[in-house]
Length: 397
Image (cartoon, rainbow, N blue to C red; front, side):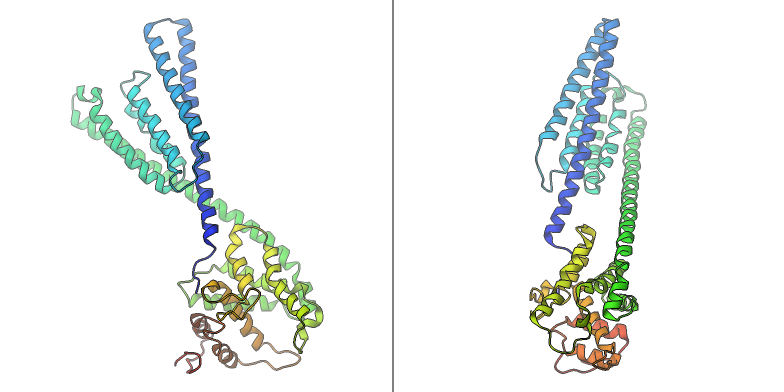
C-alpha cells in the first residue's frame, strides 16, 4: 500500500522552488553587499576630492577593488544557471568569499576587522535554510579562528589568551543569535503559510457548502452524511498511526465527496437496475469533478489523489483507471471503504439497511481483494466490532 502523499514529481518541484527561493534571497544579499562597497567607494571619492592625502588615495583604491570584486561576484551569481541540490550553496559560498576577502584585504586599514566577520552568520540566516546555516556557520567558525591566529593585531595585545577567548565568544554568540533568528523566520513563515491556507480553505468550503442544498434535493440525502463520513474516517485513521492524515483533509474530502455528485441525474440516486454505459460514465466523472473543484492548489495534492482513486480496488477491477496494489494510496482506501460502509447501513427505497456488524462482514469479504487488510482491520477497531474469523479473507479472531 502506498504510504507517501504526493508524487516524486511534486517533491522535486517543491525542492526546486526552495532552491529558487534561496537563489533569489542570495541575489539580494550579494547585491546589498556590493551596494555597501559602492557607497564606501563613493564616500572615499568625495573625501578625496577635498583632501588629496596618500591615505585617502589608498582607502579609495581599496574600496574600488572591493566594489569591483563584489559586483563581479553578484553578476556571476546572477547569470549562473544551476538548479540542482547543491546550487543552493552558491550564494552562501560567494558571500563567505566576499566576507573573507574584505577581512583579509582590509580596505579601511581597520585594526578590528574581525568584527566585520561577525555579520556573516546573519547573511546565511537570511537564506532561511537550516542545512545551509549549519554548513556555512561551521566553515565560518573555522575561518574565523584561523583569522584570529593570523591577525597580527591580536598577537600584539597584552592578555592574548583573554582576547582570543573574548573574540571566540563573540563568534559563537553571533551564530547562536542568528540561529534563533533563523528559527523565528521559519516560525513566521509557517504561521503566515498556515493563516493563508486556512483563509483559502475557508473560502473553498463556503463555496462547496453553497452547493450542498442542490445535492440534498437531487439525492434526497441529508448533509449530515458529510459529518458522519468525516467522523468515521477520522476514527479509522487514528487506528493507522503510520499513515497520518490531517483532520482538515478528511473534512474537506468528505464535503467534496458529497458535492461532487451534483452532476448525477436525479433518478440515478434511486435506480435499482444495472446502470447503462452512459450512466456509469457519469458516475466515474465525479472522481474528476471533485478534483476540478479544488483547482491547482498544491496543498490539496493528496486530497485530489485520494479522491481520484477512491473507487479503485487492490485487484485492479475498480475505476476509473483500473489501478491495483501500491498505486492506490491509503487515503483513497479510507474514503472508499467509508463510502461503501455508509451506503450499506443507509436504508434505500428498494432495500433495507444492514446493521453495523452485517455491513462490516460484507466489507471483510473484500479484504485484500478490494481493500487493504490493514484498512479493514482499522475499520473494525473504529466500529468496536469483535474480531471475527473469516477463512476466505484472512481475518482471524
